[in-house]
Image 1 (cartoon, helix red, strand yellow):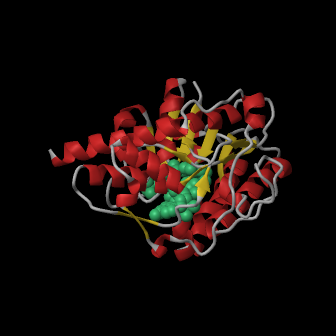
Image 2: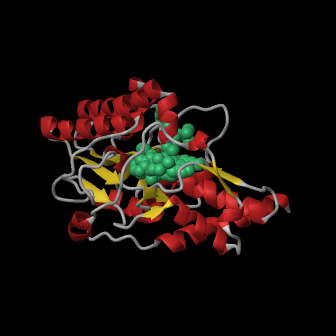
Length: 322
Ligand code: NAP
Ligand code: F7E
């Protein structure tokens, strides 16, 4: 039986990846940071099937301890300060966790168990002010936020440890992926939750930033399968994962509101407070290498994803107000 450590297991992707690995028969160890309140909402249904251990990407000795104790076959580094706007307010913290945290984890693996296979959660935000459309594994990076800059560092340190120390270390460059477990501040969930609140009479408007922004949005449950596949190959290589299709925030609003019989024009208010100091350009993936070499394909399309998110939020809120 293989042992996998997931950092960031309490996050959206961590919860789906844990489910995916458990279904494949792995021993799953989740690394969580100490908190005064419990952050296990997304994993409470599988809590009895996984091992939880404390550790923090800020803290080298906690990472050494986790690797020493479990000597894992695979490590999936999903932990990060992952919200782009926060990275302008907390750029140093973002660099410490999202960039340097990766070096700390790679050092622990190199020194203690170099045969561990390592997955780094890289991001389409690294392409930023895009150099070509669509973006593939060979597209140069031009990040546009402290988060994107931190992820570029994390990507290159992963490549560097692979080349310097012959580690099986890969970088999965994932475009936006969403689900009913997405954090409430990200735009898809902000909209699905906002639509559900308006439909149930709990709110009268939804304040958003730039409605013309476009993203390549897929379903998180599909993307975690690609992470696992990247660690099962003969040799370590990096992959771009996405759908190859973009939609605007405006289209997202139209779809989500019309799903419950409402017109978004009656409720959405554009608010400059949600604009960003710098935006990325047209992010759209070219996932052809993953389709060919990993035999990976997204299963859930944009419309199904947004309907699923709105339906789940309606169900959750209806239960709460019952
Ligand atoms: P998320 O929901 O924000 O989860 C982030 C996780 O990191 C949480 O479990 C969080 O723990 C943990 N964490 C934060 N700081 C930490 C620290 N100092 N030490 C240990 N753990 C820490 O993010 P996600 O959407 O699942 O994304 C997973 C990864 O993929 C992230 O690295 C993200 O940057 C990257 N990514 C995401 C997307 C996407 O569209 N979702 C696309 C490309 C790349 P708490 O629960 O305690 O806060
Ligand atoms: O924004 C626009 C906003 O915050 C998407 C993270 O998982 O994916 C995510 O980063 C777009 C942007 O995600 C609002 O300007 C308009 O253009 O949902 P988001 P993100 O910044 O793309 C990447 C791949 C990651 O790696 C990150 O970790 O939507 N937008 N109005 C808004 N965005 C937000 N959050 N709130 C608004 O009101």
